[in-house]
Amino acid sequence: MNPSNLAPLCQAPSSEVRSPLIQFPAGAVDCHAHVCGPATQFPYAQERIYTPPDATLESYQALLKMLGVDRAVLVQPSVYGTDNSAMLAALKSNPQQLRGVAVISNDPHKATDQDLANLHAAGVRGLRCNIVDIADKSAGLPIEQLKNLAKRIQPFGWHLELLMHVNEYPDLAKTFEDFPVDLVFGHFGYTHAKYGVADKGFQGLLDLMKHQRAWVKMTGPYRICDGDLPYVDMRPFNDAVIKANPNRLIWGSDWPHVMVKKQMPHDADLCDLLGSWVQDTSLRNSILVDNPCILYDFLALKS
Image 1 (cartoon, helix red, strand yellow):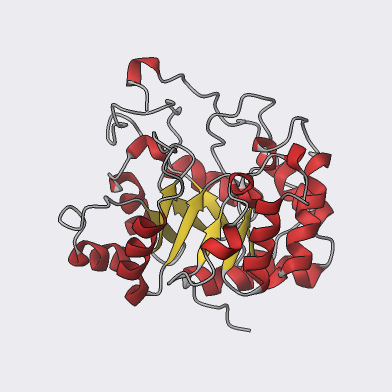
Image 2 (cartoon, helix red, strand yellow):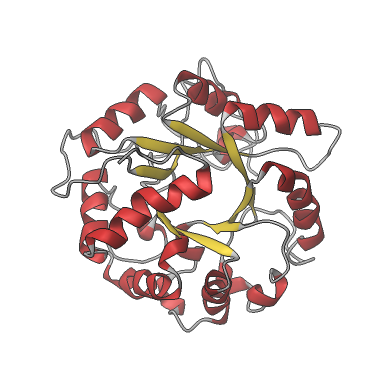
């Protein structure tokens, strides 16, 4: 990663107060968002590739209210490294509304089993591994390291969330066929639309979904296509993951949309985009409510 003085400042999310046209169901979960700052209280790591504007819990909760989303999963952003303090403080503020996905050291002496137990008690239900930003990729995917980490979190019923470009791994399905825990892939597998749905890596992801081995986050379409809203190049990927296994899909806003270098999307428009891509109400409710309750251990709503 670059020194902090070279880490560019990200553009801020839209401040326009505007609710989506679609009404999300009660208990809907935003499964991918980040809390950043305030930097004066939770300073960012010196080694980082970007500098986010403060995107505080208070601002995020106001966004959830505006969107009509009841619950959320906070994912540890890379700017904090393995210091989960900002996320844990947010989880503590509302343990019924929030769950977390943490990042820990690979060294078991720096992240002990007791540390994992403490994270679980705080509301963490998964670990995130950033494969995209691995400094040395010449050795390939660190599969043994990932398996060892998975075995440590298996007793807690956690999953491993991978930020990786699946198109770079044509043997993805074979590589992860006997993995110890469920896998979650962010941003539709993070493969650029130009590679198409026939790409071997993406097809491997679909195969893992079909065999109940992987979940996919329907997040960040703006990150993996060249155009702006409505991101038409991403529609085939949306349709492909739904066909593969709709019970393994979850949705997230990706707020505050760090490192977006194109037109900043408004979160209300992202909600409406889901509505246009997933028009079946029952399916949409599964993606927004039922599936996240299973993956993140939220209490199901009483009927």
